[in-house]
Structures are given as C-alpha cells and as structure tokens.
Length: 341
Image 1 (cartoon, helix red, strand yellow):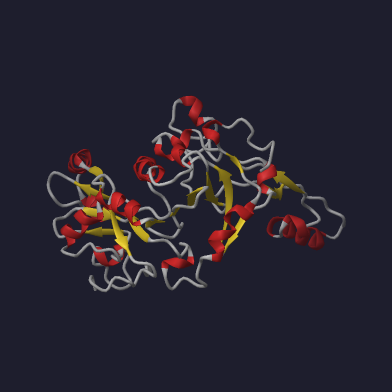
Image 2 (cartoon, helix red, strand yellow):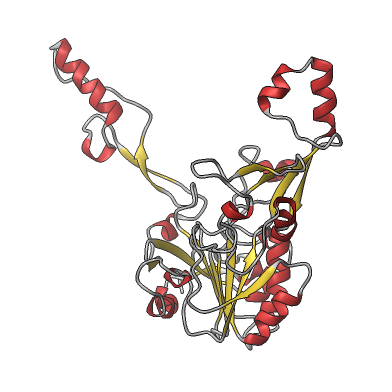
C-alpha cells in the first residue's frame, strides 16, 4: 500500500497501489458480456440483483403535460401546473404495476415501461398520465447502499478490512496532461503559413503541437494516484482503496471517502457554502475474506451482490431494498426480458 497518498484520511480508507489484491476478480470473469459474468465473478453460492430506484413525475390533475403543451398554455395556467409538479422515487414493482407489466429477476427497464422500438426508454408516460424516468446506471443512492452494506457487514468475518474499487473513467477524478492557455508563436513572415500554424494550435493534441505546452492538470485525487497502478478488468479500469466494509453502512459515507469531490455541484468550494458532499458510487466493494462482492457496473441499472445464500436471502427480505435473487449465468442485457415483450 502506498504510504503517503491520502495519509490520514477519515473512514480508514487509503489508496491501494497493490492491484493484485483484485486479480482474483479477473480470474473469475467470463470473456465477453453475454451474461453478467463479464463483470460479476463466478463461483459464489448465490446472487442478488438490487434494482436502482427510478423516479416519477406527477401533478394533481393526473396527467403530466408535455413541453409543447406547457408552451401552449397561458402564463397563469402554466404556473398553476408547475406549482403542482412533484418528483418522487419509485420502485420497479410500482412502475410495472403502472404499465401493466411484470417485475421479475431478469426484468429490463425498457420493456417494463413498454418502450416501442426506436423510442426513448429513459422517459415514458404511463396510462395514468404520470411520467417515469429510468434509474441511474452504475449508482445506488448513498442511503440505499448503506442499507445494503448493513447486511454485507453481517456476512463477513472482516468487516473492518476490505477494498473498494472506483471506476477510473469518471470525469475529473484523475489528473492528466493538458494544454496551457493558448499561446501562438509565429516562426514565419508568410501569412498563409502563420494561419495554418494557428489552426494547428487549436485542433491538434498538445503532445504533437509545437505551439502548445502540455502541463499537468490536477484531478480530485493526487497525481501519485492518477499515475499509479490501477486494477485492469475487461473494458474497465478501477482505482482501489483499502476500505472497511462497515464504512459504507453509514449513510454519510460520501463525506469521508478519499475520492469525494469538494468542488462538484455549485462550483469551487461548494461544501464550504453548506452544500452536501458528493462522491461517485464505488463500482466494487469486497471484504478481505472475499465472502461476497458488490458490483455496480457503470452501464447497469442494478447492482449485483454475490455471496452466500443467507446473505442473498437477507437482502431480498429487506423491504427497504428492492432486490430479487438471480441465478449464476444470468443475462442482464437490455433484450434479456422475455416476459415483458
């Protein structure tokens, strides 16, 4: 483990530069993405699919107007409608009830909301007039993760010792080389040549452009981590942090993870102005004893937990978590829902 980067971080989390601690995951993945095992390791006794919350927009009158309908209204009528708008989280089960479809372990959102071919599944209107928005991919709300983690820590012998993996591709997380402010230096009296050089400065990569200087641009995490070792999995690269699993059972876990972004939201220093802390959801969490693993693949609208049958039963029995057991080898592709066609 790196001794200096993120030293003294609260929550007992530190950057883990020994990426071999995650090599066991790679060894238990399938090639390709025909099943969930392109990202979820095989070999566990049971698996649970945790459905990410969706959202629904409603109005007292029953039917949410379209943007075109709102624009056609008088100012007073539009104000009356907008004052009654409300947005709420909604479960997949309640969504299925609204659209007359069936929630089952392999359900897919696009078919749950009866999306016609070629239309946008992210926002659909139910027969009752409410407007449903699809769940966020790769992300459980912090409070939901905390409920899940409470069960996870009860099913490991190492609740104080584990690893969290964060996808390295989140914008702003890592630093990198970029260009300085534009500086044009003409080395010729030929106007055409000078103009061509100016265009080259604007469109070419700094490394290949003699008119720009590449400089290091800081990210959220220190440069040591940006340039350090990362866990390479198929099509995904992760930053690893030693992290006690019990830390995520605290709904305020976003406040003390090392990858928290203090400037996201309302601009630089937004936390100093009283805004809530913000941090990306970890894509991987597992305990040192490898009794289970939580996988929130960035392109999945649900999180998969692999572990013991008892853990899966506990997760699925918790009414505060929408979860169903799924078999090993489950296909979670967008077209895998055979019941809601």
